Image (cartoon, rainbow, N blue to C red; front, side, top):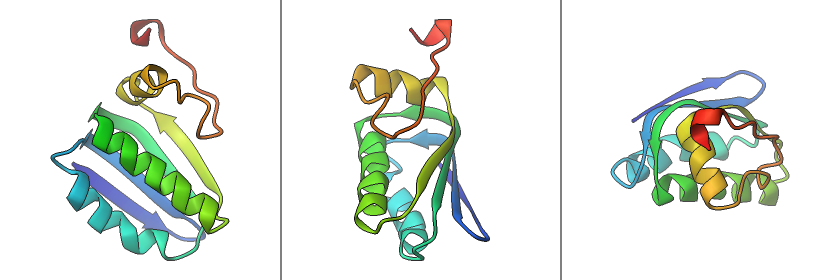
Length: 106
């Protein structure tokens, strides 16, 4: 698991590798300070190779936090693994971003 945080006028969280139960606690510990900054949040999920229900809970927690704090949340990229999980849970439109599925993901 790797989370790169790039902050200027927004908090950009770039997730790579896995976003799973094995990395959930460490991931939340890493991103929690960024969520408290009250800056617009930009997620880049294009390099997530594996995601499970714990990873989905992290994404839902980020979305819930952003909504409660009236912070803007955007998703810049989604890997096939992320798109497959969102489709499986019928959550593709839940994040307010259009999701385009590749033929391999369906």
